[in-house]
Each structure stands twice: as C-alpha cells, then as structure tokens.
Amino acid sequence: MTGEPTTHDTENTAVPAGAAEDTGGTGAAGGDRASDGGRPHPGDRLRPGTAVTPLRAGLHLRGRRGSLTLEGSTAVPVVWGLLEEPLRTGGLAGFREGLEPGSAVRAATDTLLGRLADHDLLLPAPPAAPHPHPDPAVARWIDATAAHPDAAAALLATARAEVLASDPNSPTATAAVRALTAGGVPVTLTPDPDLPPDRILLTVRGTGPDRAVAAGRGGATGYVTAPGSTAQARADAAALEARLTHTAVEPQPRRIPGTFAALLAGAAAHRLLCAAARLPDPATEADDPRLLPGIPTVLLADARPARADHHSWLGPERIDADRHVRLAPPAGLAEALRRIAALGEHRCGPLPAPLPGDLPQLPVPLATCTTPAAGHATPRTLTGGGPRLDLARLELFCRAAELLLGETTFTVGADPGHARGRALRRTAARRLAAAPHDRPPPDPAHWSGHPQLRHWWTTLTGRLAVPARLEVHRAAPHAHAYRAVVRRIPHEPGPGYGPGPLLGEAVEATPGDAAAFAALAAVTTVTTVRTAEAAASGGAPPPPSGGAAAPLAAAGVPTAAWEDPGWTGGWLADLAGREEALQDTLHRLYGAGPTTTPPAPAPPARDSGLAGLLRSFGFTVLHTPEEAR
Image (tube, rainbow, N blue to C red; front, side, top):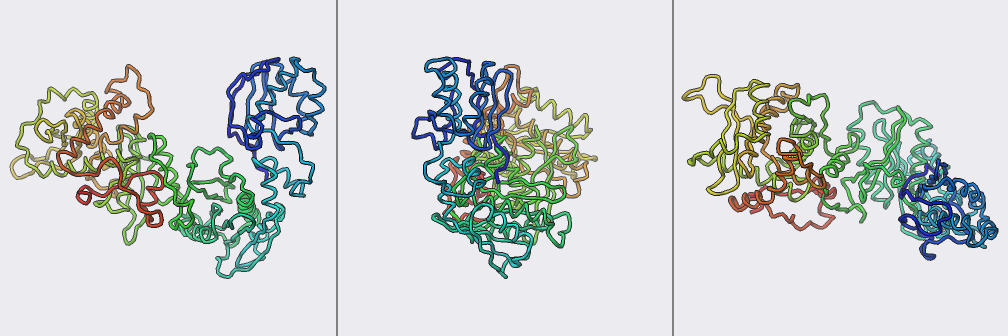
C-alpha cells in the first residue's frame, strides 16, 4: 500500500555549514505546516518511508509527498548523521535542547529542518490522544501520504466498504476483501448477478460522498477505473471492457491468474481507500509526463509480460461532475502530441495514434494510422507527411478525427487558430479551384528562389523523377493570399488529355510559401503511393493545411539567428508570423470559417460523443464554413 517514493517538488538548495539564513528558494509547504509558517516544531518527526541518499557534498531525500536535494557543503551529510535518528524516533526536541544556541551546528540544523518542512517531509509530533487508526501499518501509510494525517485517519475510521461480484468466491473478489481489510476498513462481500464474471465493484461509504471503483478485464488486459459514483464506475467498466476486448490481440484466458487477480484487486482497493481518506490518487504519485492533469486515469495491466500503468481516459458516458472536464487548448505542439498520445492509446484510446511505423522517413517524414470502424463504415488506413514528423502526426490525427466525425462536416484543430486555418485553407482551395484563372500568375522570379520550394521541387522532379508542372495564382487582386497547384504532366500531353492528376496544392500568404507546401504535398502523395499503404490510402492528396500548425510549432521555441527559411524551424517561425493576417484575408475574401473564438460550449451533459471528447481534451471542433455562415 505504501508504494514507491516519488518526487513532487524536487529542488536543489545550497546549505553551507553554519548558515542560518535561507540560502535557496523554497517549495510548496505541506498542509500540516501552513499554520506554523513552514517552520519546524521541536516535536516534529520525519515522514515514514522517507529515503535518504548521502552525496559527496550534500544530501538527497525523497518521500511520498515530496523530495529535496541539499548541496553546498560536506558538512550536510555530517549534520544529517546526527539528526536522522532523533527525526525518525520523535526525539527532535531533546536533540535540539543539547545544541548550543547560536552555534554553527544549531544554525545548520535549523536550516536543514526548514528545508524539510518546506518540502512536506516532516510530520507534527504524535498527539497525546491515541492515533485515530489503531493499526500501526495503516497509521504509517497515512502518515507517509496525507497532508493532514489525523483528518485522513478519522475519515478512514468511519468508512465501510462493500465488494460486489457475480461470484463472491472468485480470486479477484477475495483478494479485494483482503486488501480492504488490510487497510483497516470493515468489508461486506455481496453477490451481484448483474456483474460480468470477471468484474468486481468496490464501494465505500463514510462521512463523505459514496465512492466506487471497478476492476476487471477485457481480453487479456486488466483495468481499474478512476474513483467515482457507482453509476460512473459501472459505465466506465462496461466501456473499458468493450474497448479492450475489441483491441485484444491475444485470446482471453478462461480464468484470471491468482497473482494477476491480486494485482487488480489491490490496485482497486488502494484507489478506493485513497478516495475515502481524501488522499492523492495513486495515479498522481508517479509524475508520469504522459498523464494529463484534470483528466481521470485508468490503470491498465497485462499479465504477460507483467506490467501496469495509468492512462488518461474519459469514457463515453460522463455522469459525474469531474468527468465533464474541458482542458485549455495546448500551448504548443509538444503538448498537443501528448494529448494525441492519450487519445490514441492502442488499448483504450477512441482514436488512432499516428505513428511512423515501418514507413520510410526520406525523402519526406511519413506517419500512418488506421481509423476504427464507425457504424457501418470499414476501417480506413490514412498516410500523410509534413515538413517534420511531429507536424505530420498532428495533421494525420486531425484528418482521422474528421473522418470519424463526418469528413465534410467538421474541421478539427489543436486550438481555435489551428482549426480555423485548416478550415479556411480548405474552403479557399475549393473556391479557387472552381473559379477561372483569368489573371496572370505572379512573376516566378519573385518566388522561385524560396529555399523550401527549391528543396521539395528538386526532390519531386529530380530524386523521384516525377514529371510535374507548378502553377501559382493570387487569390484576389492585391490580396496577400496565393494558391499553388502541382500536377503530374500527362504521358501524352496535348488537346483532350486534360491538365494531369493533382499531386498537391496549398494556400498561403506568399507565393513562395504556397509553392513550397504544394511541392511538399506532391512529394508526400508520390511517396505514399509508392509504399505498401498505397492501396488503402489512395493517391488523391488531402485538402491543404499548409502552415496552419506553424504557430503551434513555433510557440515557445527559440529560433537561432542563423535559422533562415531554408531551415524548417526558421520557416515555421516566419509562417507563424504571417498566419493571423492570412486567416483574416481568407475570411474577408470568402466569408467562410468561424471566428477565432470558438462557439459557446454546450452544457456538459449534452457535449457527448467524439466531438465532446475532443473538446474535453482541449481540441477545437468546428463546423464547415458553409454551415457556419
């Protein structure tokens, strides 16, 4: 139940011997220290389970609620050697009384204690009254975990648990009873014939709201839901079992192995006890960068090989209030990809995760994904490319989401600006393709020297040996918007043979950018068709998105002075600076596309389905320009 220590608030703080003043910034003080200004009390003791690693000129401490690194003097390990036993045994008061006031040792001791208090590694002295929970093992766990141990112990002392299972004698049910009993909570085992054979439902009642956790398996993968109401736990369990069974690659064993049942039951009991005592959920203790703050997590476990980890997940039925979360749009491309990875988790994610797989990454980075079957539609494999693999993955994810939502009805983006840019480019390309080009094209001398254009055009016509023709047209007189089109030259050009198949198109703020993105799209189309994905993906290029993701890619990323547009980073930075003006121009020309402010969200209970799930993860889902006008 104690788990592994984690590092919630790690900090390097120089503490030279004899220094009484605060020599470094402090972390967040623990809840038990708030009333004392973060200063240690003579009766304080070290949190149980705190591990200590001496350094050459310092010390590293790590516990369940924080960690701390002290560096700066070889005296720090010496002082700790004197202080550790009194701190662990509750004899701090007697130790401090033996130190001469004003001495260097007293000053160093007080500084070290202050840092421990700042990082929530100290507990108040045991109260005169008995501990609210009589079991020593449970008391140590609460002391190691809780911000307010006495309050948590009091909540747990009034809790009453119940385990529901179709077979009360199943390994998972009996293991859950043992785990809850070890946690010091009275347990009732109740048969529930409505539950599937491999599922158990754990509930707890006490002074707070009733909480429930479900555990079971789908295929060969086990799961533990996030704490919630009984209805929410049942709904989450049913959705997870359906999803895990659908994505299973191995047949489900007839019976759950005993050790696997104990793992699932122990994890479920741990989450339920933490919820009953209002302790941090175990999923938050590992500092897993894959988990998204604000999104509930589920535990997924496999028996062979043995593995268990948490994943951010929202089920299709969001009953409880904490399931109606809506994250802010991602601040950058890296954050958007984190959310894509959560939505595309291969076992429980509702959307496909675009990955490079076995596709070649030269001459253009490629990613691929297969959309799940939706309704009567069959799965469809999508392949796409971009200037970088991360941009290709983002674009492919948005295309897959649009396909599942209704390809001609919705536009998906990582944030409102990204979605608006994709929608406006799509509409502009369609309108310009239908309009006659009665204006002379811009002088190629003004844009043919674009370094990105030179690279991708040479790749297309030279390395890939594709006979192609590039055309660039201004969207409207005096408008800073251009459409570029790359077409394959027919084998027998002449009257009656047509202009040749479309390989790529783009709509951008400058003719050079438009030509470069059109050439890049053409390289992607040709390379995709030549791979094994050709039969599933088809050879037609997708609607243009071009530099719509440039602001996301450039956000918070410094650009070196030598990164000109010939470098992808420099090019993206330039595109980001022109994106807002381009969107305003396209909106003015065609009156299409929603404003940068997304429409007012529907009430959470109504914002269901895939569109609601995407919005919950911070993505923007917009209707097509025709519907938004």
